[in-house]
Each structure stands twice: as C-alpha cells, then as structure tokens.
Length: 380
View 1 (tube, rainbow, N blue to C red):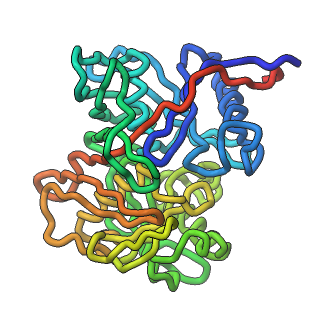
View 2 (cartoon, rainbow, N blue to C red):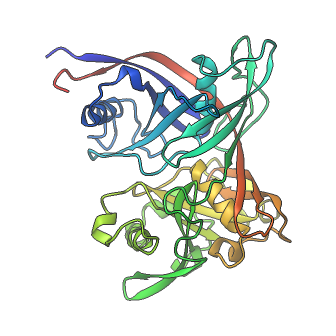
C-alpha cells in the first residue's frame, strides 16, 4: 500500500527535539492523529530506528500548532510525549525545552508580528497542556528566528542565539495547586516509606532525596541506568506520588499515564564530573538533580523539571529546599541546578508572601533542523 505524507518541521529546542505539525494538516480524528505521531517518531521500536525519534525521552516528542482567537497569544499548541518501544501518545505533561522552539516557530511561520528591524521579538503563546500563557523573547535576523549567537547552554556543544522563556503563574496546571500533597508527604516503597515532595509547577514532579537510596547525587547516568532495582523503586514512588497528588485514583490507573508525574533525585551540592568530562564545583551550584523520564534516566534534565525544581527549592518545607544552599530567600532568585551534563540557571519570581510562584524563566537556544513531508504507512 502506498505511503501517505503529512507536512512537518523538525526543531531542536534546548536539549529536546520534536516534530511539529499544523493541526490543519492533520485528520480530525484524534485516533488517526495519534497513529501519525507514533509512526513519525516510531513508538513501536525501542531504538525508534523506523522514524524520527532516537530512543530517548527528549527526542520522542511531537508539537501540534493551531491558530487561536486569543487576543493574548499568537498561536496555541499541544505537546505530545510519544512512547519508546510502546504504542503510547501522552499529552498530560508538557516540555519546557521545546517552548523555545515554539517561539522560533511562531516567527518563522508568520504567526507573530516581526519587528521591521533586526532585534528582539516578544512572542506570547498558549500551552494547552497546562493552559498557561508563555512569553518568549526571540532574537530576529532577516525576518527569521536568529540561530547564531554566543550563548552556550549545557547539553549542547555549539553556541546559539539566546531565547528567553517565561511561564506566567506556572503552578497548579494539572492539579490546581503547587503542592497538591502539601510541602512533603510519605510515599510507600517496598517495606518502608520515603519522604517526598509532589510539586505541580509547569509539569508535576515527585522529588526525593538521593541519600535515601544510598546515593550522593553525583553518580553518572550510566551507573544509575544499570541499577534496575533503583529504577523500579523510583517508578513505585512515582505511581504513589500520582495517587497522593490526586492525579490518579489508584496505582494501577497511574500506570496508564507514564509521562507525569516525573520523578527526580535531589542532593546537596558537591563536586562531580559531567557526562562530557567537565568538572562541576560545589560552590557553583545550589543543588544536584537526576531525573527519570519514561522509565530512563534523562541525559540532562527536562526543561519543565528545571522550572519545577527551581521553584520548589525556594519554598520552605519542601525536599528540594532542604537539599539546597541557595542562601537567604529572596522574592526573585536565579537558581543553579547541577545536572548530568552541566549547570542550568533558572530565574524564579515568588509572590509577595513567598508561598507561591509568580513566574519562572529559563534561557535556551533553538534551531530549525528540517522542513518537509513525513511519510506514514498507507494503512494508517
């Protein structure tokens, strides 16, 4: 049977890569759309060799763009996490890294009004996964999103043009509260309980202390990834965290939503080596973190998780706050997170009472990689 084609564009945003579709180019059936997403990425093979994914959670992603009547946003979009070796399409969470790419897309595809001269263009978009407006400052050159620049972000080898992402009122997008299970809760694991913080800021996360698993947080990913018992323990906690947060009624039901909440290990700063061999000094970071996404340790740290962790770190009583050395709490602060491949800096602005998050921001780079038509099997 002859294959069919669908127009698409591939962008890298931060440390993620995704296939972008326009809603108007897709069939109206939700099931048919999901079949296209799984075929485009190749959800069916762990290596994703038969599609545009590469067997990692940060490259197994799809963005669908649509026009909007909103006076505040130039476009609306939905993020989809596609399964790796399993036929799953999940829109429950979102992606913080690809937000930068959505800003570039808005410029490149004519959704945003471009300034007459080269310079910075502020784009506002609506993320429908969390129903939040996102302001993105995108440098523009020759009528397109600028790619070249001198900003180097951890996890990317070459410098690029800096894109600043800011999420407004980011808390409670999924559960209605920043901390749906209070600042900390006790989660069951094997024959004991573990202290955890379930935080719903941009994307829901479960944060636990690395030391509760006999770790100091500096362990490299390839060592952690070999510890299947650890991954099983963390998955158990993730499922119980979903129930504690009211996201799922039962642990069994939580298994049907593999993308959120995600789970991360946090630890106080210490010296460590990155995956690329660079030395990170304890005095240069406020916290160490390692996260699991779709059953695997993340190569760096998801952008949505960086937003969440930095925010939770400034709130008294949380697990991240207990592990950090961010100094005296201020209403606005830049948090330095040490992840497996470097340091990410996140700006957090708290509300006046210091109990909630007013805005959270992150600097990224983005690049348009290809534009064309994605072939999908005719039987779809």
